[in-house]
Length: 453
Image 1 (cartoon, one colour):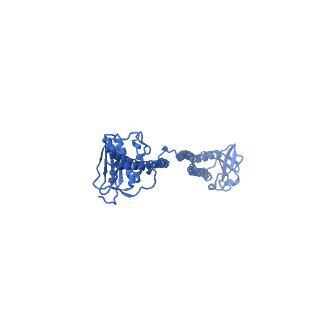
Image 2 (cartoon, rainbow, N blue to C red):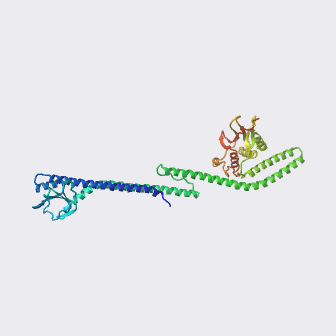
Image 3 (cartoon, rainbow, N blue to C red):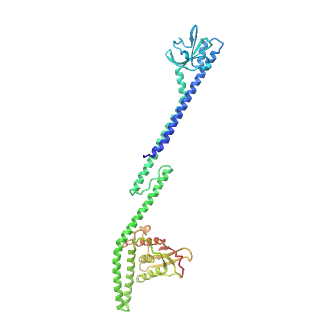
């Protein structure tokens, strides 16, 4: 059975309200009983004074006692009835309401005299002597009872009403906030990841709303990642087939050029064919990078000499740099710098970065490649510097996202694939502008298990 939180909050308060009503009623009953006993004690004290008095109980004495107690007194003797009521009442309390001693006096049954209702009782003055009747007005009795019960009833009613108002207000406010959170979670389930406004007091529900916002933010990030991975996977499948066909064509063209170069021998024509062969090799390497796009699984775990990878990549791009007048600087370190990973994939990343740097530097520009690694602990760092203008501001913050590029003819996949490969090797890739140059930096874990030479 569904039990709304509003009912869960109201039920304890309703029980508290019932308790307040019970305590108020008990207090009112006790106050009424104390008022009744106080009136009876007052009447008994007057009856005691009159029953033990040695002076005659005349009209003047009885009227004086009425002023002290508020009760009417009727004295019945053998000669008749007299007292503070004129004329004396025709109806008097029954014999069972007459006490033999003042301590046993109790306000007894109701009687009507002169159009007014009284609570009557009697006491015998002396054994066999006259009987004194005390008639207490019922209106005074009710007034005394009401004055006794009015304060606890007023306090209890006020507390109960206040508790009910507070319970209703708190329950309504909490119910509204819970419904808002429920509505926001349904929107999140429908794909709307906007944050929940953190309204209200700093309480548990505010903490819950903050947790919902964190969940929505992480779901949004997860959705973006899933979409990007899906785009990469689909693109990898499509481009893989196309790149495979293009690579086969490029391989065939390279073989044809190699055969023609053998027939030409040495000379100026052979040098031109060598340039064509290097460009075809570069084209094959780029096509292989597209073939690797979208492949799942961990990269191969083998010891890679970064010096050799950079040297091979530089040798592929050196003819293009000479043709464009780009100063290419690469000084290998004195010892081998090794990492663990897939040599082919890391080679593609380096080829992509250096190709971008050549295109960014442009004719007459400069390009510098650096490799550093500590001898003991630490990561290997590859830096590629170019003298180009750097990425446009419109794409600078999203440079490593798929399909983001600053080139008019670019696709925006090279750096996205590079980041994917580097992160798969537990490394990092970033970029910065410094001294009017652009630097792309790759950080890879050092292969501590292989000795350096």
